[in-house]
Amino acid sequence: MTGISEQDFVGVCARITGFGQYDLYGTGMAPLYLDTARDQVGRERFDTFWAALKKALEQQQGLEKLSPPHLEVARALVYLWYTGAWPKLAPAAHAALRREKANTEFVAAPSAYTEGLVWRTFHGHPAGAKAPGFGTWSVKPPDVPAIEELREESADGAGGAYRVGFEDPVALDDVPHDLLPAFRASRDVAPSEVPTARAPEAAEEEEIRA
Image 1 (cartoon, one colour):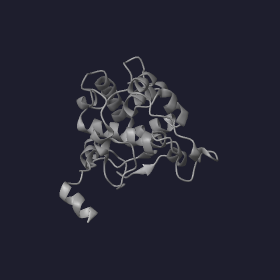
Image 2: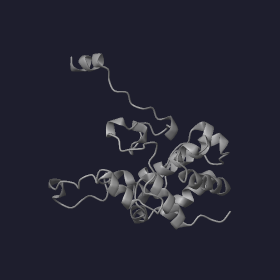
Image 3: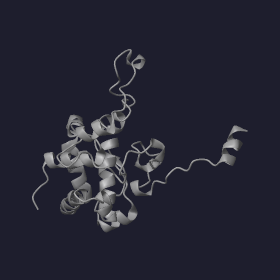
Image 4: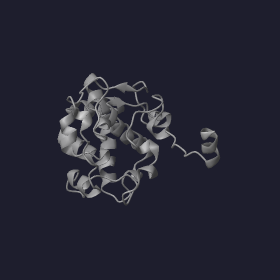
């Protein structure tokens, strides 16, 4: 199988992260993240995953067509782009992939932390780095763009950004918490094993207020 180019890598990652290719190139992390993923999964196994991922994205069911190990790698790749860290994989996926690397989370590079996409989701900045200019606290952040605009910005000729499991736009409260971009409460939990937060029952709310 031929090697994966940086252009191909960024084009597909734009569809699974929800960010445009311009944003991904702008981080300067694409070559590092491609090398990191290849190194962690193994070159041949990553090439097999990549072919399966591209095929899945062309089908209506999308990522649901991936096998559990490949789905775990896809989640790890998104996690890498958002946080700059390669996560610990689910033990079953780690075993199925026959990885020769220690199954631990690590930051890909010091600069990867500051370039994490998570900061861009709320127009923030990483603690201790890339601080905004003086007085920016008094300026209202840009409004959240319309879903149509996001799809146009992320378009790569295949109808825009890939939508994970949602046919139409949904309210933020309806999205499972493990699908939202953020750092993990526990750094030792595999992406596929993060539980969905449960809203407190009425009795619990009354107890809290009391």
